[in-house]
Length: 387
Image (cartoon, rainbow, N blue to C red):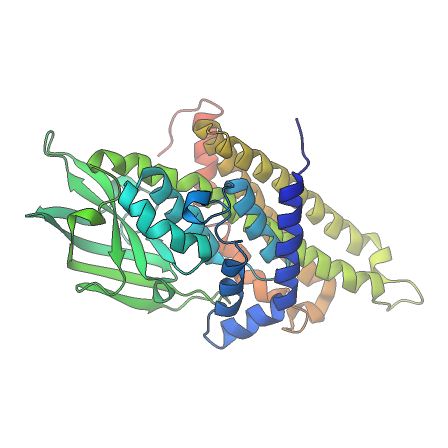
């Protein structure tokens, strides 16, 4: 058992950390409040190869795995720049296409993922289905050699920044007549695809959208994989990387908040010559939050290692646990940091309250803490399914 990063992973961590700190949380907040995107940071990270660390070298990537991509997610977040599209595009969409796409799809899309010039977002959530993807109402039906997609999607991140959206729909199995999932690569400017922006109480440079698909016509090669049989494996291929990288982003955000608060409390003096951090009422909550973040990081490391080793079932358990632990730890860390800073904690200048909405959302999405507990109860503790 080895908890050390490889020399290459160490170098990646240090380089990404330096890049993130050069931009910093002020840049992130400025972009979000102006309704703009973190395009400069994204493009530079792409040029330096950080966005494609999990893409095979034959397509211009770094040849690493989700472990390396989690490092990128965590270190940018620890610099105050948690980029949600890292989860959506390189972690989910690129993994799905790399593992289950056709040779032609890999050649066409993966080089763009590798250098960051291509953003592909992911659309699974629907208004009526909630967490139950078995109830998805978006349907794909054959029309000659083409496909026609109709349905609605909600809480779809970054559609305004992306060239394509990876849509999860249901198709009819010709042999059984039953509906089965399939994934389609849909251009965001396709006729019949419209969107409306959702107003969110989260300070983020990435926007959320409702999507409406009204008989969106797609060519046969828009279907991910060689056949409909690729649909279910392709869908699940993106879920573990999603959970692991979301967890990494949460852990990085927790680290950022604790660092900001620790710097403040170590130098702030109110009662005589001692810093407020010398008082246990201030330092112990921060120390407790730091412990929780570090425990989450350990589970993220384990989940990523299992995933990269091809142990998908075990990675599923650890990935869910990592997502749960990091979501709770990040929310605790940011809230504790705000409390430690007092009134300063609520100002934009000190840069911690600006993350309250994001870390609260991390306990809900991409899978709620309650659904993770259901998963653990059923698959780890052997309890009867409760839903």
